[in-house]
Length: 600
Ligand SMILES: Nc1ncnc2c1ncn2[C@@H]1O[C@H](COP(=O)(O)OP(=O)(O)OP(=O)(O)O)[C@@H](O)[C@H]1O
Image (cartoon, rainbow, N blue to C red; front, top):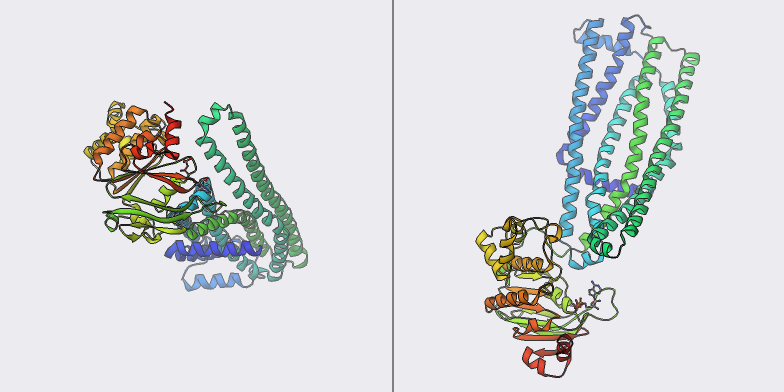
């Protein structure tokens, strides 16, 4: 094993130790117990053979005498019936222990998978927003599904390797006692065969790495294709998508075939080697050592049992080597997730009381630049959101409006300047508590493949039906929900695909209003609505005026008329501020944006 693979293996063992708790001890104790029972069972064959007149007790390393003494000590007669009963009892106990061990192993495997999944999802939920924009979500899905299955199977293989080694040791004891030199010689040749096959095990590990990499691509491709299937159909790009998909799945097929070919090749070499070892062993035992027939029969039986075990050991080692890259990739992603942690725990946060937002939110000289940008998205921005008033933000595309929303949400932090809430500087440690007072409605709505009611209650699980209808009413959504075949119990489809764009937006707004936020941010949240419905929503928001602080980001400037204050951004800087009436009459960016929208 290479150094990095060895380090990964060490971490893997450590993780199993951490997640298995006290269950690992009985699992580890059961394995030698099974081995001992198996070994004693095999030794019992000696008196059986002797009792039917096959061979004599000489040349068996004193095993026969030891068995006779044991029977004597237990006051058992050494006859065929008793020997068979003892043999059967040993084998039944061995099977029962094996079964218990298998259940324990499966439990250890599932505990490991559960713990790793939960550990990873916890870290993911606690990660900062920029981490999600910098990574592919399909990589997370892969880590939680395919990789995790491989990691779980790896645990099963590891336990099987341990059990197989114990069984092999159990067989070796009687073999060593019967014919030490011969057994030692056979072992040495067996080790040589394993050494020859080492290269193949390394190749299995490399295949495992490539599989991890290519399956990443498969997940990313499928999720991109599914997200853009409508556009792909409109472009007639189905065939191109299919081509890309088949290229990746073809690579996966080739890699897996390669892996299986590798395992089968190793098996072939192994069986050739073992046949050769067996023939040489038999020849040497008969011609050189002249072993008595009972001992020879016993040894043949032992080796006949050991061969499939060694073969299984070789296969299990292959699978283990193939799994390790999945664990390495999982660990790497987990570490990156943890490095991006914004909070200690992703568990529920209900600190609304810490930020009642009584006076205002102030941006003071705020500057922000994304990692891969040359110029800042925002520079020296100062603005003021008065509590219980409506503030609007507008400006050309790329002016920095959504960046302001992300800063306000605490998803990003200012690199220069700061944000104050009621005079208190908003620190990174405050972000979660502060966010719990906010409802954010983006342009792209996000709905689950659930009913209307489930989608609404996702934000407020305790809400009654009356609360849901009130929020729907405020969001001008009650009429269309009433018309749905099952009303609140209608399933909206994946990402709300069974609703129109405007209906989705109104549902998203209703969900935001349901939590009665102190601050409501609407980022192009009504862009998919017709004028009539948009006006109905703004009329409904007007009704909330005085009880909620609202920030509206919109391109359609007519929707901003009701705002107490409008900030106009241009190139990340504040270009103008004022009311709609004042800005509309002043020469400047706002007036020109207005003219472009309403040339009449
Ligand atoms: N995650 C990101 N990484 C790098 N640059 C980004 C990122 N998000 C936005 N930007 C850049 O920051 C600038 C401001 O973007 P922002 O989305 O805030 O503009 P906007 O005014 O909301 O635009 P629009 O009206 O088109 O939505 C743009 O130049 C954009 O390319």
